[in-house]
Length: 350
Image (cartoon, rainbow, N blue to C red; front, side, top):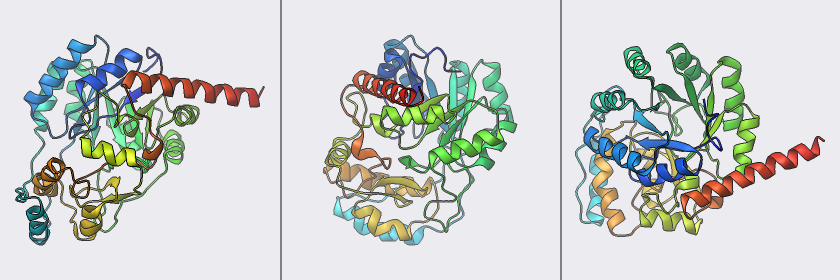
């Protein structure tokens, strides 16, 4: 599936700002590929990003969609009340804790019409009719999985490839169904272990993702059976990324640990530990996207104030050693490191 790439590296979809047409196009032009992040965007805004990316590169790229989940019945009144003081800290008001479908039907229509070559899904399994429409449009379907069971179901549903997400990954876990009593939302698998388990259950191309920030990491996943590696944290500090300045500074300082939290969105996600995460994780309900909308104005106000303690600082476990600079230079660095890793191992077995 990725034989045409100079190096099977995909820049991950990073919703909420970091993913930009400039970032995706830069990696495509360097010899890889990647995904625009449709999450949180209306269909019109996604259309503009697709158009802009096509202006910047004639190469192939994908789009990632969030699969809408069931409407949560959890009462979040107490959590909303808890955040009133948090909002006042920044002169803001909590948002409306509403459920929505992330404009999914309109965005699905768009990627079908635009005949996007690679369409990936996170947070669940697309409906059979959605998979059929994409296949009819010539698109390949990638489904994000976090367990062997999810992988089996995705294969049966007609997925063309799987994005295998280890627990090391930054930002939201791609869990389809989560356990509200578990801070991580459910079973956690390291990436290499999950690749091995998934490949024993299904015969599909696998994309490895989760904590990959060095070329040797990519080499390891390719040896373990993946056909490509998807990297997000490694590009958060790329010049072309839309990462907020306060987030960039926190990543560069490299002084924080990472933990899973529902405090910002109502879904388990890995981020840098800060005051908001510490103060509110235990109380945060499993209610996505209601909590996401509730905290959105608070997070935006904290970002405007330049305060890293009040917003989500998504990052994978290995963020401290992630590269920075122009995306093409990051790509070249990772490519060189992977070649060196392969050469080193080859000499050991010569």
